[in-house]
Structure formats: C-alpha cells, structure tokens
Length: 315
Image (cartoon, rainbow, N blue to C red; front, side, top):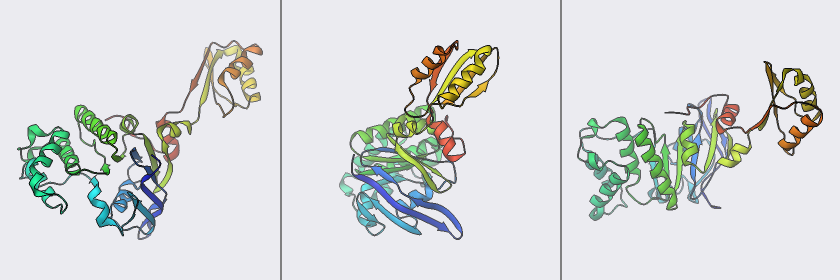
C-alpha cells in the first residue's frame, strides 16, 4: 500500500473570516480502510467536499487516485463512489426505482446491464426484501443503506462514506461494517468519516484525527496507539507509599498518588524504560509491591488528549 488514493498538501478552506480547514496534509494509502475522525465541526465534511470537487479549496493541493483535483474531476469521479451528508431520494419511488434513476444519470453506465447492477447493489446492502417498497416507508437506517447501494452501483476504486452507520441498528451496523471490509478485501480504498470511535477501531486499518479544522494525527491504528502514554500502576501498602514515590522519582517516573488502605501510584513510563526494571528497583529497595500493571493508552485516551473533546464510543 505504498501508493496513495488520496493526498492533500496544505489543504485550506475559508468561509469569510472563518478558517474551517487549516493546512491539512492527508495521506490515504491505496487499499486501506481509512477512518476520518473528529468531533462535530472539526472540518471533516468540508474536507471531504473539497476532495470530491463539491467545494473549492481556498489554498492547497489535492490528488485523488493519482490525479490532480479539481482539474481532473471528470476523469476521476467515475471511479469514486460517495455518500455525503446523508442519502437523498425521491420518497414516492421505490428503492429500485430510485437507484435506476441515479444509475441512468451516470453517462458511463450501460443501460443494458442496469437492472443487474441495481439488483446486485441492493443485495450487497441487505435491501432486496425492501426493493419494491417506497422510500418514504424506509427507516433512517434503510435509507442509509440505500445511499451506500447507490455508491456501489458501478465498480469503484475509492468509496467515500460520511457517517455510514448513522441511524443503523446493531444488526445494520454489523452489515455495513462487514460490507466495508469486503470492499477493502477486493482492493477498493474506503474512506470513512465518523465520530464513532468503536466503529473505526473495528473496521479501519488507518485513521486521521481532525480538531478545530486541523489534522492533529494520522497513521495506522497501531501507530496511533503507540503515540499515547503508557503508564505504570503500582499498588503498595500505605506505609511504603513514600518510599515507593521516591524510588519512582529517581527512575524518572514522577507518580500520581491515590491514598487509601493500600496506596496506588501511577506514573508515565518513558521510552527505553522496561516495566520489569521498575518492579525490580522497588523490590530491591524494600518496597512491598502488592500489584503492578502496565496501562497502555487507548485510542479514546489519545483522541481526547488531541482534541480536548470526547468521542461517542457506543451507538
């Protein structure tokens, strides 16, 4: 995955005096399932709209599937499927009729195979049973899946989904998650914007975090996890707490102390310090260690630290 499906350099968008997107440098590898995370108002949707030529950048460069955007927009968009800011359909038409109309608007889609494409797309998102039902009778989750079906009407090299599990029940969420994984398994790059951290962790290989219009982190999920702080948790008798604290300070691990019948001390472990060496130093100097654990930062911890805001972690 050395080539990039999406690449931006200094991407910026202003609305009058408001700086909505500030110098974003995105690098989305081909074949990745890339999570685009951030609180509401962080600039995610504005960035996506610029990537797809729906909004003009104030500054910066964009390349999608190796082509300069928006100059090469007409050549790139047929290879891109997208669901942005929720699906929009004719409520008085059925799911099948809506997809037929949307497919007919695609000048690159042969009419002879239209019925087969629509049927296959509905099957992939689990809507075959509701294909003939009018969309006004669809639940929000069903409309969301119909929007994803529209993005899948033709073979795509890149799929861009803005909050694809919004409004879905747990079963629908699992179906969409599995669908996204199946797309990636065939080599399609999937770019998923979401505020649901749990979903990103379960289906993405890479992620980027937006906050206040700026890109504050990006990389593989493992790289992002390693960027968080690892902490040692030491449980000692209250009478040994002062000695344990002095030893931790001498090792370069200034602790936070929580007092009680037994005292818990927590301290960040810097790179190059082995947890077992910390335990050995405590025991060697006479501290009665009753418990020791290494707590590695979760993605949620990292994102809260980066953005100053929490993420929804359940639906």
